[in-house]
Image 1 (cartoon, rainbow, N blue to C red):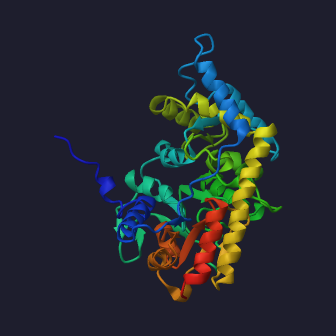
Image 2: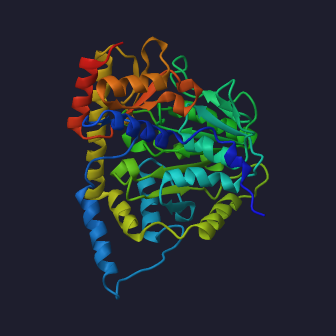
Image 3: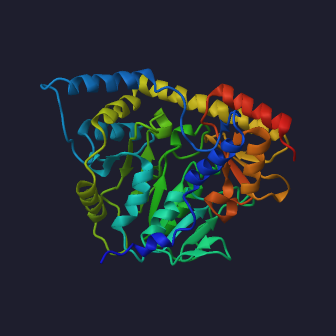
Length: 409
């Protein structure tokens, strides 16, 4: 007889963002006619850059001609895009081989799937707060006995607490762990690790034969000098790190869906041989994945250089200006804020120690503004909210005005 995968029963409540949408829909039912200003989910809002649109239209036209039509491509990604990503990384001083690059339908999918090539009894370390998929995918894979209500954490996971005291930079694990999830620039806090801080993690991972799963989806938002755009800028990282990234926030591809993962041929863990983890990920992808959209891949290639990259950078600059307006608007209201400089996210402290979900409700009720409760990212976020810069400029301006005029703190 069929039975359920009991690991899924270990997941606590619902996934964060659907829960936010559920609450907002309930609020709208009780407040008909009121507009909601969404600064919660990191969903891009501006038009795709023209050069990328033109590239994808060209591909669509090719698909309309039997002489140039293409069906399935390589599951690892079209060769020209993988080689384009190799060239893209060279500007950061990183040398890669195209066999180390795997194109996908987004970093979130890869963040959830990458742990499948590691042992089910692996000890997992996550930052606290953390993007929920890092945690939930490992719980659903059986690496936790379930939710510990008394601590507000999952059993068996190692939490690296990111607080005001450590400037939201995660500390090294105080014990041996097998997999370490890092996001830099960080979602949700907006903090960025510098080369020296990241080097400590690389040295830890090499010593303990651990593997770092490094999410660099927001690297194009780094505006200040002194911060790495790729973990492979750190010596030795190719021996201990997998890097995930995405065109979602880089080029507005949240709905187009395109990302990539780098699994170096030199990457090793405690019981692997050189090149084995690359081969295992290749085996996983060719078995469970038919490859990213060939239309999306043409657009992604256009984003990597020339006019397409220039236009993508202009899109990033637009959202960073939104972030500046939000940061300054919240500060003017008297809130303590972090991030929003090298990141599209502002991490704001709730007033008077208010629980993040209660402050979420207050902002919605008083200002019609939706944010993301920090508690949804982990216990260290319970007195913070994440405010997203992804919205039209005019809506950001209105949202800040509503907060200035109507929020009581």
